[in-house]
Length: 326
Image (cartoon, rainbow, N blue to C red):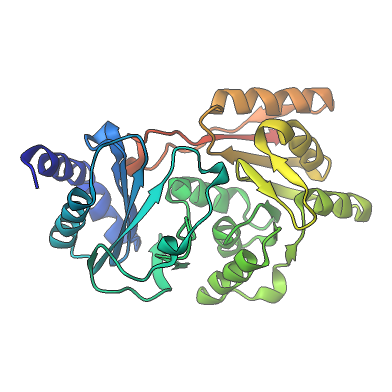
């Protein structure tokens, strides 16, 4: 490993020393370790999930070859004490990328073969993580502080989590005393979410899970007169349901907010977030406010927590906003 590469890795860990110390007390063992060019190693993002580290190599952002990536993996093995390091390569435009067999390979670039499912912890929550099951591991670490924040906001409320994925937001709210309805078009991910609930000994009978398009859920809730004290909208930038319907944040954001507000209780809270490079938090907040104004609803902004320390130098910022009906 060359000197400049090693120095950049050392510096990135030093900036996280206090986080590691605090997280040991908070029972957290999953972090962003490296943020690419902003921390001196273009094209490489690294994350830790308990005893497994995962490197993301982004096409076109660096000239690192496999030997360099393997040396980074070995460095993390030595300095973090992880048992396995996996590599995932991402092309420039992931909207059309299909996860091939390499994304499902159990073979790490360094260390021993990991179990296909491991358990990580975030502030006491137990979460099932898949180190080599496609593009994602099962949790988005940049939402750590927002999950804790919404756990408080949703306490003892009826909560609707749309685009629930593996239900980390749902679980956080349920552990805070909320009754949570989780909605996603993917049965695979909702089943994963149910396992997360069971890991934390949360009774599934009190928390409905629906494999359905979110707009269908809004329509059903409105027909039944159902209202929610907290609605969580954390959509992918692009998705397709089983009937061929396409959702796009760019195209459908205003309609999504409108239909959510129709089933939001008086004084209810709407949280929205997405990770799309062409949209920032200011743009999103303006759009949400505009929709609410068109619906003659008063929207009071709620200040969200700062991004976690390990994401302060992230190349892509999470776009998020939160409003309470007046």
